[in-house]
Amino acid sequence: MQNYLYLPLRALISVAAGVHKQWREDMRRYFPLLCGAVQAILFLIVFVSLKGHVITVNRIIPQGDLCMLLYLVPGIIGCMLSRGENFLSLFISALISVPLCLIIRHFFLLEIRSYWQELAYLISAVFWSMLGVMFVTLGRMRTS
Image 1 (tube, rainbow, N blue to C red):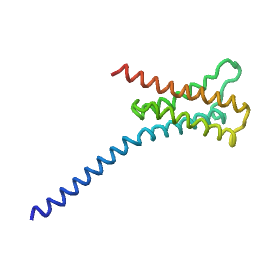
Image 2 (cartoon, rainbow, N blue to C red):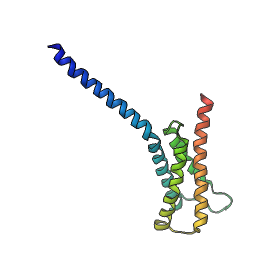
Image 3 (cartoon, helix red, strand yellow):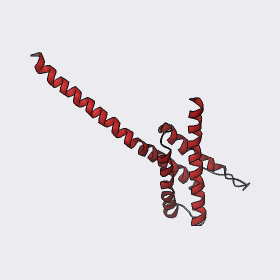
Image 4 (cartoon, rainbow, N blue to C red):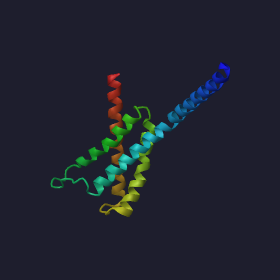
């Protein structure tokens, strides 16, 4: 009588373990894409908040644009989520967000600068975002 209960229970446990193992392998495969998507969404949020004048910038002294430092935040958060392992996926997600930002700028926001100036702005924003990734990576290397 105990064998009749033991065999289905053992089969159920082995199936659950197999499903858990498959889930862990799938998460290991798709986790860089998830972290890249989070970084791209944060990059778009920073872009829209800066260009849509949600965050005001002091334009009295036109020397430097300190709001470019806000692009460090998507890189820092994306690298912290990915545990510093997926540098390439974070870089690709930042590059993918550039055309999305240009489309949002063209259709929904007021255009002041030319296309090439805006493209240069976004490429420098990618630089700042990846600099945030580098800060977190270097901080982790120093502590370990």
